Length: 73
Ligand SMILES: [Zn+2]
Image (tube, rainbow, N blue to C red):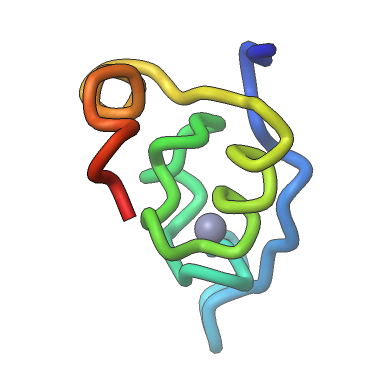
């Protein structure tokens, strides 16, 4: 299960900066996340939730999930 963009995470504005937003969970800026699940920190509540639902992220994140399922904690 995979989506093209992940943009339904809670966002909050930077204090005093009208046009900058960040993930309310992991505090990564939205332009850094860029609609991608792996843009969030591995500890991000939103990312963890979607990964539990079976979503996978691209690149190195997906690769490590495929190859290190046994000893990944
Ligand atoms: Zn996040």
